[in-house]
Image (cartoon, rainbow, N blue to C red; front, side):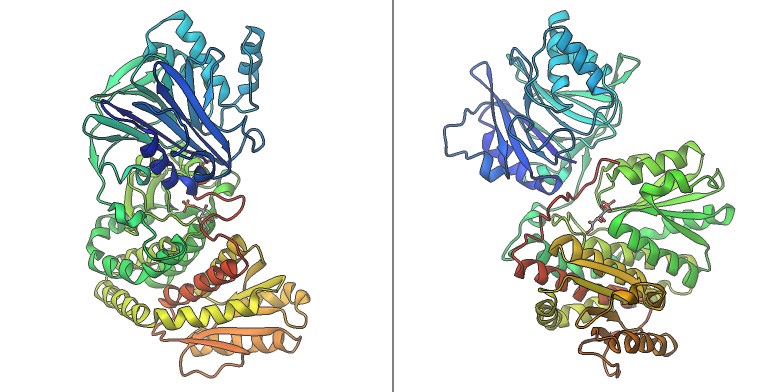
Length: 598
Ligand code: F6R
């Protein structure tokens, strides 16, 4: 994971800007942080364990200058410690680097470098890059050529930014880890994603795998590196229309709450842009008529994918399968050139999803992608892509992007089925209105439910049909931010094992179907668990009588769209349980927003 940033200016200092940009990247990792600045011809490093605010205090005596790089870390190689925090410098302190990714076989390079007299001060794979660049600079004083020679020796995934003593420039390299270049006036930037730089610019160049770049205050040069030979390439400047305000918490205590509250407006926006998805749905239909549709995703996006499979079958009569991205290599032998992969990823950077896509492409399957982040790697690897238009999501737990993914899957299935094109627009507007008007009520009922869960060790989430994936999502939200063990289950499957775990007062949150036939079955399931002492909390259509210890009735109009309503209290229940327990829902332990390691 990790976030990297770099700023180079013609005039002025960079420390405050680096800190601001790094804070926007904290969702990628926050166990340690650091910056390296070129000042008065020397490289100065400030780094340590903890969040950016804790490590870098700009009011203290920190050297400032016109070029600098920064890093926020999610540890992969080496424990969380000051030594292992980035940036890393070469022996002679002539080179500093920050890196996101993991280098293959770095131990061999490290041993060779040590045999040649280099002294290492960390356990990280990244430090080899600094020493390698130092060696290459001893061979050739041209920084770009020395940098490209060093990069040529690296294998694995990397986004690298490096500064070199005596030069007002930043050198960049990218392979399988995200890196964007931001274009300013008399200053240029680089970062792991656009969100870090939106307060500075909306003009970006997206590097591709295997490319290196040089940025100075007034220029950007990009080369592809083929077998060690540099070839100049022209990269188009692209405009990103996300507003920087979306990265501001406003009056909300946490981004997660703000993002939950944004959901009605996102649905409205999607309702108004149904036809933006037409070309994509045509492609999906075309390829699916030739072969099969394999939906590939991880985590919350996987749950949206399960709902997508349901909708494609129910609305469009289309056959599909859903494969967890990290399992794709082992479960995809049947996929070939007639098949289409529908990759769903909020970040567009999840390594497991990208690996699945690369495998699918090597088998000549078509790749269609649904993502949220402009310029993300997935948009570059896929044959076609659409955006879910949710705006940047900062909270580590996915909320508004789940809802937007489900809404987009509704739109695609409806466009394919043709008959429902107008209806889906109305339905999205209706859910948006219903959510907008009942948000306060859902909020306070969810808060009450959270008070019933706070002291529990286990919580179960049960659903049937289209709300079985919603139950999985409710459980994932609760466990990842409150650290209470939670499991989601299809309600009918419960009696095949998990029922053994039910004892006095174990809470089960049950999502009640609107459809009579399925509802009868789930009522039976509730009775089964309650007779064993469970505490049943129902989220249910209003004006319907269901046995429960606590119910949260909602204005549900259709079974198919109910996940978009039901998921909102589930998100808020997780949020209030976590905050009441003193956990920070925006930064759950051990997790990062963008999982760029396999
Ligand atoms: C859970 C969560 C994760 C992500 C997963 C995939 O709240 O956010 O489970 O859904 O890491 O991420 P994307 O969608 O970026 O591929």
